[in-house]
Image (cartoon, rainbow, N blue to C red; front, side, top):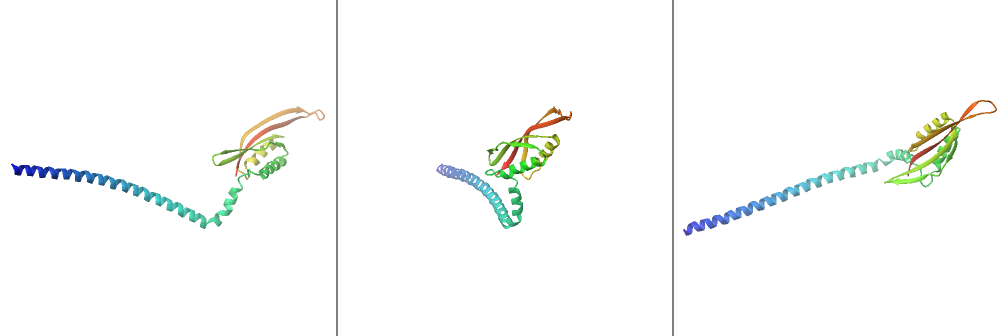
Length: 179
């Protein structure tokens, strides 16, 4: 009977050891799986960073090629510190179309990293010139958007020639992207 008891004791110890080994194996296997997932993720991040680094190096090496285009892009923005060039452009366009123009000082607003300038314009002229003026503004070398356009036509009867003339007045709200 003592032999049976020794066999049971030894079997029990081996069974416990086997369970501990299985538990330890599962724990180690899960740890290896976690580490391999992290490693694969890190390899992906490294590959992405290498790609970005190569893009930056490529940009640095080709900067002289890109510079003329970058300068053209820079000219699309009005200068928020000194918007005189844009104001002169608008005044010249209005004079070209024989419009009587009044402009309020611009108001600047910032949304995120984008700065915009709103210009309120009032004008008096004839409808074809107003349409031509708005086309010139929209197709200007600046990033400009016409936000509002209000036009009013007043008909006056000329007493000297007995002709009916129309005077058109209006206002225009421009939004220009500034640097």
